Length: 372
Image (cartoon, rainbow, N blue to C red):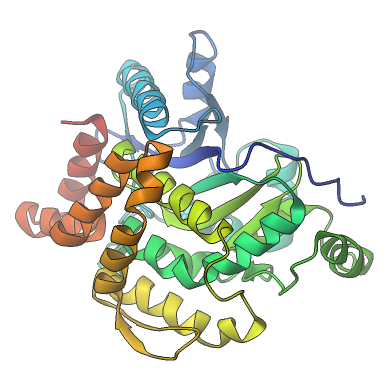
């Protein structure tokens, strides 16, 4: 079907999607409880929206559209409390984290929904291995051209969001030595990675999307698993590289950082994005996934080597006036603390060392999500 027109939305509005783990409180493994949980949640008022995900051991929550950090955070906290209460009724724990540290993908069940069945038939075992958990952030754009400008201008900052949100150090019971191992599973899909370098919406629609649709490879924008993708039906861009944080407070902070960056970039004081910016993109993304805040970047314009930790702190300081103007100062301050204190991946490794078990690490993640 043809690509739908880009819907104009209020610039710099934001919304958050969080994919969450459903955990058995008896053995701390994932449990196929989403049908029961979704049935229970339909019987009570729910802030925002809650939907199934590809396997029955996960759900996705969606916030409403917000302009300010305080409003977004308040809704996410209310959503969390509602989920925790429902989970207690079913004796399941709910938590963030980009991967469950010891679940076996072969034991997962595909949720009974036509699109999920299609994905499973197309991608085989990769569909069950897609039991990974990410945060997606939407930012409103005035036009498709603005959306593409922001998408490519943000490529320089993608490693920031990977490092700040990293919470997936363990897979299949082992420390992967990655801070964000989750993204390795995303990279297995053929339509993952970066979007094509186009800055004009008409060209994107007619010269790229229509040709891709004609090949039969894709049917809609949902078939692209890009790190950042436009969502014309919402009038947004969608950042998709973040692991689901262990707390909703961190999720709100990441959304505010993206909102502030977009405000800054739309002033167009930086050099315009060019195709050559992507020469170092995969290297920088790998550094953030593997080493987190301790990674090293190559600046796409100057080719200077930079400490990722210092680059994030410098950028957060630069975003302070934009955060203040948008009401997101508290969210940016939260991320400054993350840079100094360590990411969720660092916290999970500490919990594993303290408890001596992957089960203890999952229990700590459940308590952290509850706000305990």
